[in-house]
Image (cartoon, rainbow, N blue to C red; front, top):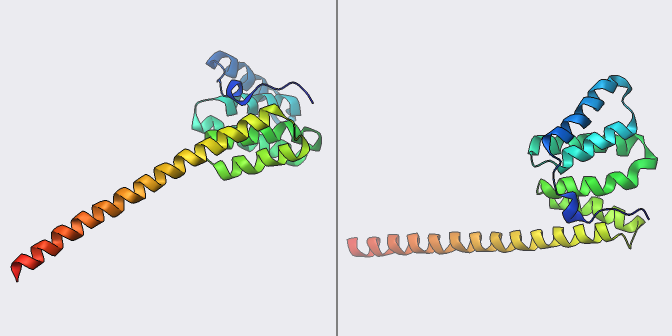
Length: 153
């Protein structure tokens, strides 16, 4: 297994000049862009804090995943990470689990899985809190309406 950065390291965006170097190389190669150049650019885009960049990075990684079977393992992690950063946790989990099926001891994927699970749990709790708040608010409004109807009689 190649040494890969832990998920938290992979979330550190490139500085704009570094991303611009990758973009320039990608554009320079044009229609004849190599798989490595496309992967490097997609990697930089996924690491970006800009959602538009992240979406483009995922699109490029999906193309590589479909057309270059020898690069699928590398793509899986960054497809998972990009979806995680875009809060598409089901997709992130799907790609990450595929990677863990191939490499069950991959620390990078295990770390990302924990991050995904943590976000899902936190957002689930927030969803429950929001739903509870709506129920309480509806109850208060209903109670006020019920009282005002009772007074009119």
